[in-house]
Image 1 (cartoon, rainbow, N blue to C red):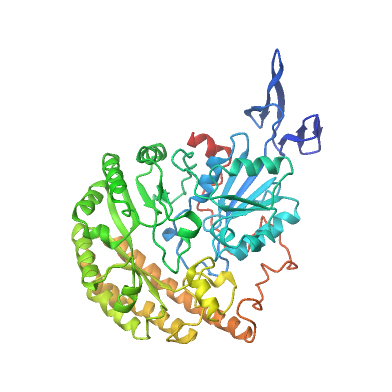
Image 2: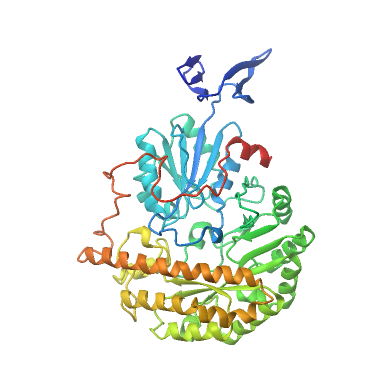
Length: 544
């Protein structure tokens, strides 16, 4: 049955289910392939493009969104942001008859088209309010909304208030069933898949960001494992993905890289050298590809001479290393950290001599730390000419042992998730007041990224990507000024919440309240660049 309107045409089967649609400016031509047993395939020539799909199966228009934190004032420069993987994985798991559009709000704005059958939103904790805002808007337009990601996985009941369905855990082996249920109006409230086999999962569908004259260069995110054997108090990875590491075969990783044509990679695994035997196989396989890669690792990778040399020969250009703290008491408590600060200094020297960028991740606000930790850490970093850092304030993310402990101790200040962003004090520190921790954190950043510090540390970086060193330090210098403004706004907001119960009375921002004014989902709040292309079927075809 073909239903035509002024600017559109919809094809329905005998039961009334939608088979396909023509949008304004296109045209539709229908045909059917028969066998002796009856119709086998129905076909559509839609806007000059032919599509075949099984008879009686209709096309879903699916919008996949990775929302941004709209309270951050674009603090992180766009060229320092790495595209995420979840949307590419979901698109690859989507049955081929459906139309898929991926949107990462960090890079691009939502499309003007509001006519979607299913909207899937993946959310981290700090982006949960924006995810709930978008979910509310799309549902009011009659679209089915499915929420997933790390935050809905640890707080599914909360997410269920804003969605037609919530997917907890991992999407492999589950996403096609969710879409099937959406097609037939049989969506369940919750779907769960724990630690599926990822060894033969479809390769992610890749997109390239558009850039001016090749800058910034396209860096392809890639991941070869799930799960973590560590049980860090401030992390929930082992609770969501399990303690046992599951791996994608090295051959599949190589196929993914070769198919994409990417020459710059970012491994998103928590510890690229965590399983030594796998890492050695991976590094040997990467060597003939002539790629340049960055990754997260333990300092133990650098101190393992054989493994470090194999990584160098495979194209390692930089490492994101979890130093966490230089305080002896904190090092003892963090069982995955090294026991001696001298070993960290040796790792820094070894990276510098090999031309590898050493990016240190630090945490401030641990119970063992006093206000003097900032002075000690700054002296250590400048003395060892550490090129770049990620300075984080301890954040009690929901689903972690840390959150549970601080909640028991009555030290959680609020549950406005937009401020759970690792740069804002969302709990009551043990040896400092929240305002004191925030102020000393900002002063530390100001001093580390000062012009004198950049120059002093810069001489040691002449053989380690000096232009990247200068660009990153200047960019982080700029974000520090933005963070100071954000902290003023935050503490003004926090003082207005005085007297509210720690875990119940903090009122959510307007974006989360059910009766907030609803704007059109095609016009999100804030500035959105068009740094990434917005292809739909073109993405799928180019990846096959």
